[in-house]
Image (tube, rainbow, N blue to C red; front, side):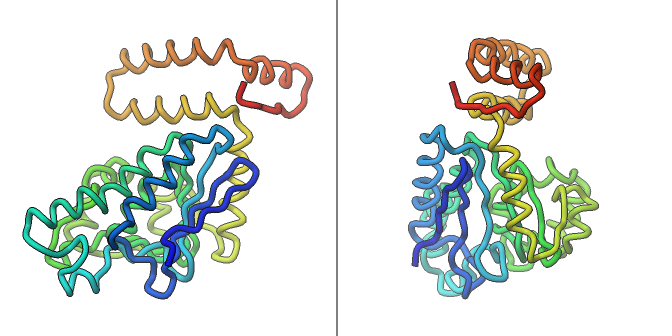
Length: 265
């Protein structure tokens, strides 16, 4: 079965995890390659301006494949060095692929996002949740550590103390708590989730594509740089934007009191 269903329309690509019967587990051989291929194609296509990531069925993703862990197979089998390579070359490959998307990523969390599934959701630039969504990083309950980069990204989203509470207790929080903690920006009725995600993506996709990618890059780099460096990067990127046709279109649209039509030129 294909891991990802990919659909593109109106400058928006929707990626749907497609293992609904087993709550969209990840870690099978080839999962990293599937994500890498999809994200490479998106990055290469200037017509794509936004991505939605969601899950088929009742879960966003229940995380790593527990059956494979029990059987010590796939990415979870072999010697410790082999397992390390399984993470690096497969699980981490899919995470790096999503993190490396140059366009904004909206995680539309339709149900449980647990362990690796929660880490996946956290890679969204914007996260919106169904009222049926749940979030947890329950690695310690399985006798393992958070092995998917969650210890790096989750504290940046909800703060050290709350991230530590989730990691050290294995508690699972509901959508309302996730909203209160800043893990998601909005909670919507379950049946309205995809419509809401698409409406939000349409707003994003209406922006000029080069400026959109530059803005995401500046936000990303801002996590690690000094303020002076951020200003220097902004000056250089801004100079490029000022000579685009889209910049002139934005100005003309504002003066003419109409909606702009950005073309990527």
